[in-house]
Length: 489
Image (tube, rainbow, N blue to C red; front, side, top):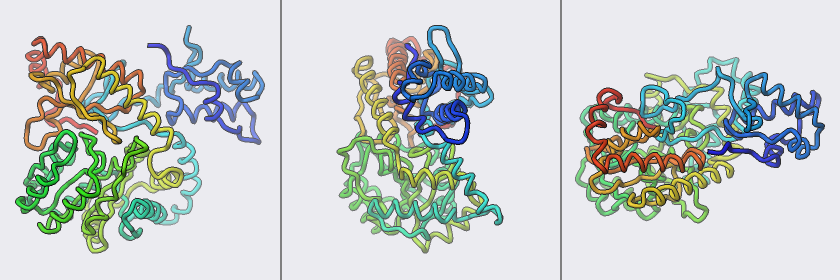
């Protein structure tokens, strides 16, 4: 694969105006370092030649030469024969872990599609710098902001209000991520043995947490393209459930989006049954198609809704910051549940998220464009190399939910794919009650060339299993290499 490049024009835009009052070469080196560190210039990308960047920035050749030298000395640039100057990261700062399906980090050259999350967007470094400048305001206190930084709660509440669910900051509780937020809700609302309605398939970490809390799960069957609303209403009426855990916004893993009419009908059924809607909105901001009709939040249809959101998909998972939106009467119980395990999310990361949400409440335009390109590359590659694979292209979200050809087992494919240098999560991992043996989830979160390569590797794995050459060996390796309940993100 050819080395990816970044144009001198784009590099100049990323650098912007050089900070005055310091040597120009040092200001340029810092700007480029920030761009590489927060992913705006991806590692492995060839930077413009010194001559090209000199012209684009209208600076001296010496300035660019010295800046590149600083980057090489600090580990952010490497010179490779035939590839020019390539962006890299200092050895001590490289981390390949992704919270993936496997307990160990993937090896060099392996494509990891078990994690439906993206790299940090542009501007994270600058957001941290601004947040650090504000941090002294909070150092005079104990730092245990159990409800969250007040200004962040205001911004989150305002976002709900703009989306169609009027919200007060007093209805927001900032958490240490969505999974932690779901844990808070479960402990506050559920007792051992309570029935809980859960979509099937669904986000596996939620199912694992419910089972650890000894909840009795009532599967709510999903079609590949979304909800059968009359069937949902029937299931809710018969379940006698304390709560229903739903992902109506670009559902994980199917990518389906529940419209306002369906939300209203399901909300009425939940109210009639006395069932509390617990809505995972982690992917609600990841809309990719401009013509998609975005519904109002589920809470606009049912005031009893407890919503859980996160910055992990819309901004960056490394912030480990999320939130709960809940009615005033419910929030005190959530706080009591929260302090048994967690006294508050980190103040600095809350301030960083505040800066990022003020700039862009959801995905930035740049990140949306990148995801569209990756989605298109995955779709094109699958249609070219796996024409018998069935899937619906969603208007948003981060993954395709794909049905393998008849007789091809998804778990066997996932295991054989390891030998091809590809990690994928098979359908049974997303199942509440077994089955889904012919389904795989394929996130489109890596760059388009990598997504294309992933489809080629997946096609080889499918061909191996379909030809009867991988199933037995794959099954034999399962116990040796896979934990019984592997993690996906």
